[in-house]
Length: 280
Image (cartoon, rainbow, N blue to C red; front, top):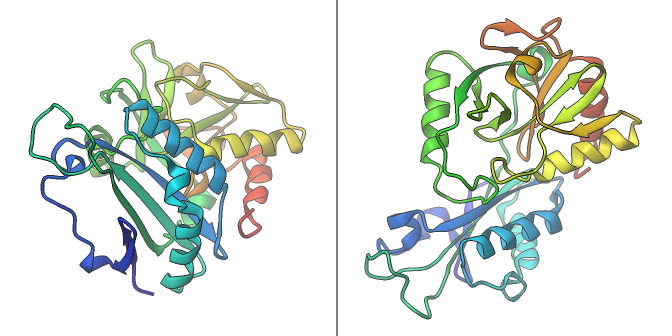
């Protein structure tokens, strides 16, 4: 398959998609985005992703009515056009193009970009043996619940931890509370109870996170949304990450300390089974 794009109402090849160098997304990171996984050509939780995209747009005062963009139709057509069963759909909305100034000109036309490419296949080996995290202090902006395209802090945190041989950074607040990683929500099994940080402006309101909590309820697993200290997570019985493109990823160690046996635990494996059917 060849990656394809949809730009302001027109489908085209990725190399043909061009935006203005004065687009505020390019100049100021003045925009929001969403990533959706489609397996067997079925977008996973499309409604929830689009609702989150609308919330992000509203949060930055980006005047766009997603209903008028008919994104579900665009996504269905893009998946069909790209010729791949498992597709990563990326949506980006910016405030549009205008001469560079912090003030936002009135009546701007938002730039709408949707891209379609093969969904990356996560390593089976890593899912079986788990990944290593390193804890870092949070250096991101204050509203991580908004999916802003301004991800430089995340890029630097991930780059630095991967340079040192870790899979990702485990982001910690100033009070030693666990938040998330650069691109995933965090769960831990502590004293037999599945726990994850509560929703706040400090973490992404993950669509897959919500799905994991629903799956835990269906499986009869006790779960709680509550704050977790780093020292408690390091000695947890199990730790795992979840995200749109990777589903569930077991964590084998944090800061060089092995989590329990170092292998995926029974709760993690039970929840992984909910991700097996295509499109869930």
